[in-house]
Amino acid sequence: MGAIVRAEQRTEAASVEEGQSQYLTFLLGGEMFAIPILNIKEIIEYGSLTTVPMMPAFIRGVINLRGNVVPVVDLSVRFGRKAAAVTKRTCIVIIEIETGDEKQDVGVVVDSVSEVLEIPRTEVEQAPSFGAKIRADFIRGMGKINGKFVIILAVNHVLSIDEMAMLGQAGGAEPEILAPV
Image (cartoon, rainbow, N blue to C red; front, side, top):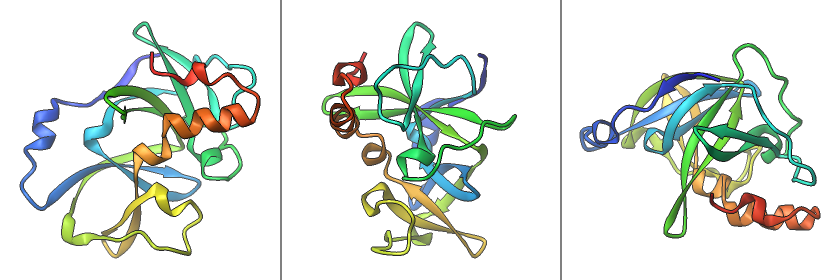
């Protein structure tokens, strides 16, 4: 499982001029989503997943990423949709999330990665309270690009280790499996 793209120095992304934000855009079920580039560690090919029994349906399994166990979340299932079919363009985006004072790597399965875009803050609208097919707290905002909307995800809500552990407990799984490694 080789790295396709590795995030460059975070200082470069942080030095984006004031009023701009960079996002990695990707497709999921035909819809365009975005994640702030500062949360992205790398993008890898889909494969070498180890399934873990008694996990919630949205946990596809775990991968070994340079000696670390990284849980892999199927965003389609997390959003209440059916599991996405794996194609040649399917990949895993490794995202760094904050869990209290610690950081945790979590992989997310996406249909395909599009590009890194700069979306001016003036082109980001508040998340709608209705109409979206995912929970409102999962949406950080709606970015406008060439007259179309891109859903900007609030990764710390979507990939909340505490919430996923509670859902795992409800399903009879051991929450320790999802604890930071």
